[in-house]
Length: 136
Image (cartoon, rainbow, N blue to C red; front, side, top):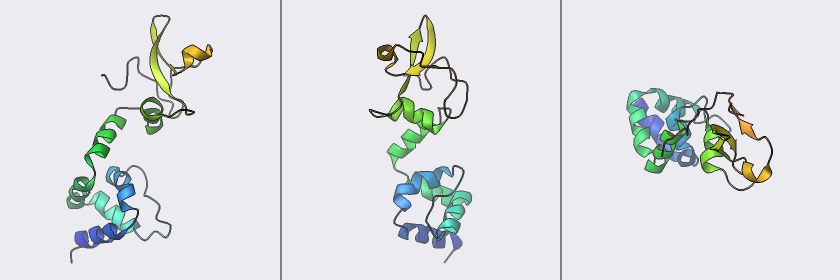
């Protein structure tokens, strides 16, 4: 059995593989935790082997790929969540017009009446654009 097949079969038996497939596919700064490190070498292999990168990409659902493409346009994943996916009770940011200038603000800024404006991402510190991250 080839190395690729061995690693792929191992990952297919991991109960968390489906839930973590996007993290594994993106290979974004670390490995998903599997407690004992049993799948660490398998994950590293599919993230670095060209043949296996194609294999894992085929397994990633289309909706995850679309979400990931949107996420890549933001300065960081937390800002993406605050703009596109926040729920009630979570920090929700939006681009708005304030005294003629585009500014980032807490979504319910107009109801709160205080200075909740942002020029820099509260999480990664990047300067925020004067336009939406994704044009509609």
